[in-house]
Image 1 (spheres, rainbow, N blue to C red):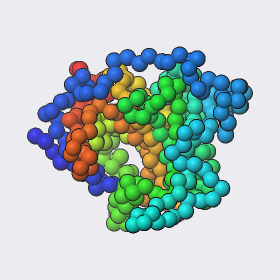
Image 2: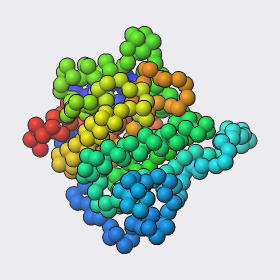
Image 3: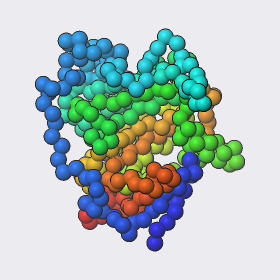
Image 4: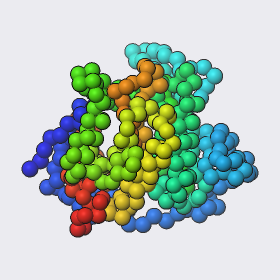
Length: 329
């Protein structure tokens, strides 16, 4: 029997219709094999050596970098000397395209985030934190770090790389999610995500894995098949202010979740991103930052585009069971 489920934060509805398909091999976009492009064609190989790109930040050094931050050669938003300016275009309202768009590159041409050693994965997240702090330039209102893995979700270059963008306003989707968390906090004087984690740990059915400081689970109202959310167990409103030990455990669970998706769900194209609080507006005590992994295992159609209501053909309980390796494929 199909169900309508509501996201507790955004208020978005999804249709859970597991009768249409339940297993990864019954879904559309599983990838059978990934073949790296030759290094000779990679634009990231000579960064810091032949001057192919300007390094904004590097670890451990610019000459022997394992992680490098460079400006995006084809930025969606540009960093200017002045902040974004509002203007009217006849009947319409608009802004100048001022913001931040950077690339964060790991050295190994073949190792995706799932395959990095723990120290490098942790340091990558520490670099994200530092770039978030740098983006607080008085012009930007919100920043997001994300990975596009695979051509169907926006990856145009094979070499593993990540993007950081900062916008001059808080995106409406984020505003909507924050509003739900704030309403719950004002009513109950508790964090909504903390309460959800307590409920999920009590039921255990949607938990995929946990470690000392973080937990990975399949969200109750998952929009996409095999969606995964990784959250610090303790309450931290801001990603950039989170201690390194917690960052390390979150990064570790994201790596483990990606390896599980590779093993049990056909290594799908996917995006993962960090959902943080806006720069302004105080401490946002009602917000609890987290990371989301969205595999691209099903096509979007007329209902999704016309209403924003997603159809998910995989029950999150079953998805968690499969990703734990407890279900026969």
